[in-house]
Image 1 (cartoon, each protein chain N blue to C red):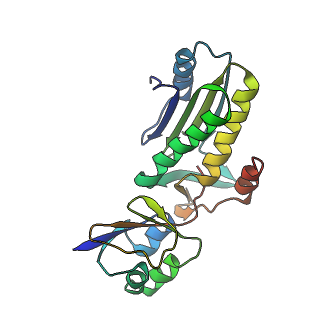
Image 2: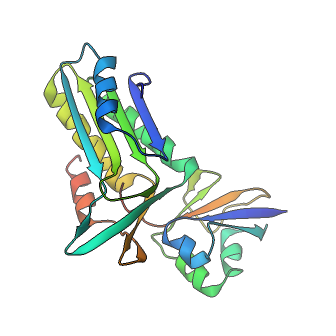
Length: 80
Length: 155
């Protein structure tokens, strides 16, 4: 089973894909640690917001994650 | 293009005709005496750097719901008959319309203020990520400080 990570804006370039399936580790922090270091660094930018299943998340590192969840990483928006 | 009810908020992945939309919007609100609209289009470029293409990305679970929430806020803040907000996503060329906001009201001042407020919030708070192709290379656009100072006007 897996989680889906979604990368918006410039994070898609860093990740090399718009989405990535990863094993269901317990926390966001563990998932980020399991990624490529350059991508992990970009995702840890404090300006990057997080949404889980389409809902903005506050405290990011201790969210409880379940199989099938989609976690979106949202860098600062650039205006419409 | 017909207008769907008092609040009409749309994300479009293909081009649209702003004049036709505004004509339909006016026709849908015969009791309104004033309409104010804002049209944003893809700039041809700044400072000699020609923009060859622009792409707007969005995140489906957030982008349209947030635009609908903004529209509800605007409708609650001013006495409007109608509000229209259309935003493009996807690939665009210079001159293509990106965003069209229009407010319909009995009196013009409410329509001006509502359209202004809606645009300031769309520009600074909506879930869009934009990249431009200049000299064959794509670059992501960062937020502008002006977008946040514009927003601060509304308290």
